[in-house]
Length: 293
Image 1 (cartoon, rainbow, N blue to C red):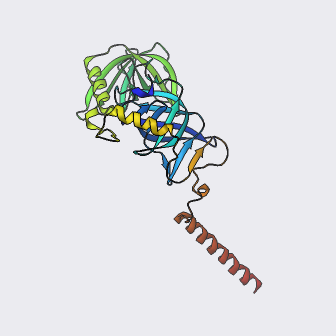
Image 2: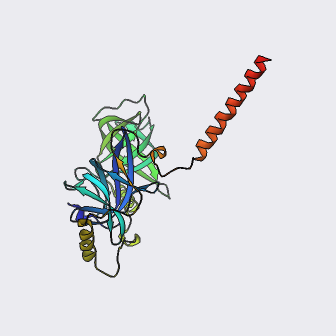
Image 3: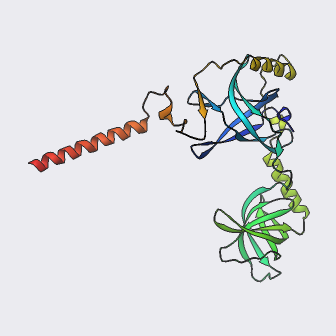
C-alpha cells in the first residue's frame, strides 16, 4: 500500500525525537501526491515545524479502519495555490500494524476467574483487552499461573452490564505497567463474545459518512486538485509565514518557547517567578539590615 491509498481526513501521528525525548504530533491527511502525502499544516507558536530527519508515522486509514506505519524521510511545509500545508515524503510502503495478529480492544473491567476447574476458589482479575484469538488479564501479584493452565473467566460489560463467560488457556506471563498479567488463548469463541467484539469495532471506527472530507476546491475533481498541488510543489515555493522550526534529535529543544525569537513577551509564570525572586531578595536585604543594627 502507498500513500495515494490513504483516505481523505485520516488521522496521522508523527513520532519524532527531540534531545532524546519522544514527542507525538497529530494532523490529518488530505491526499497523496507524486512526492508524498499532503497533510494539514503543523504549527508551533505560529511557526511551521520541519522534520529533516527520519520519523515514524502512523495513519488510521478511514477507508478500511486499519492502522498503517511507515518511515518518513522529511516532513516539510509547502505552499500551494490553496494555502500552506505540510508534505510527508517517504520511500517506503505502508505496512499494516495489525496484519499478523487479531485486532485487540481494551476492556479494563473487573472480572472473576477460576483455575483448572476449581470453581470454589474464585479470584479477582482485570480484563485488560480482548480479541478474536485471545485475551489478557491483570492478576494479583501473588498469583502464579503457568502456561497451559485452564481458566474460566466471567465479567460484565456494556450499558446493560451483560455477563460474559469464556474458557481460556494461559499462553504466557508478562507485566502491564508493573502489574502481573497473563496472555491467554480463547478456547470457546461464543456468540456473546463475537457480538462484543463487533460492537467494540463499531465504536472504534467512525463511519466515513459522518466525517466531512477536506476539500481544497469543491469546483474541480480530486484528481485535478492533486495535479495542481503537484505543480505547485514542483515550483519549490516557500510558505508565506514565520520561519520553520527544524526538528532534530540533537542539540537544544527547538520547541522551548525561550528559543523562539518571535516570542518577546514574558509568560505569566515567568513574571510571577521573577516577582517572587525579587521579594525574596528584598526580605534577605532587610534581614541583613537588622543584623547590622
